[in-house]
Image (cartoon, rainbow, N blue to C red; front, side, top):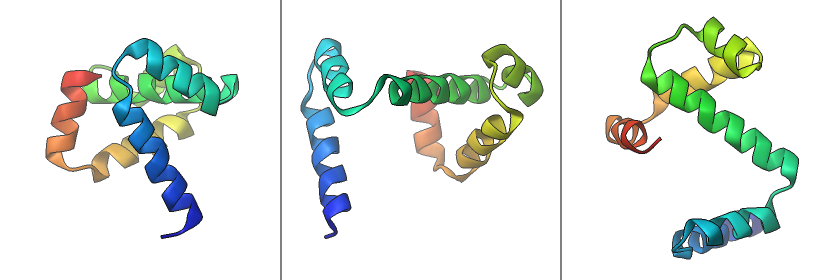
Length: 93
């Protein structure tokens, strides 16, 4: 197993063991810069809007003040996920 894969798996294990939102917030505060957290937050909003299927991509881009390319990349990734995972995301996000 590569060092990065080992590190990623360790990070995922840490996240899975965090039992409270506050603990996750502290964990992400330690491992991610403010810019990285902002990027993840924006990605979450993009995915939420795309999964809701209520707005065209250009409107999402305008509303979230991000490039249409970011919206398109998110849309392309959603097309690749398993139906069960997509259902999970729609319920949780």
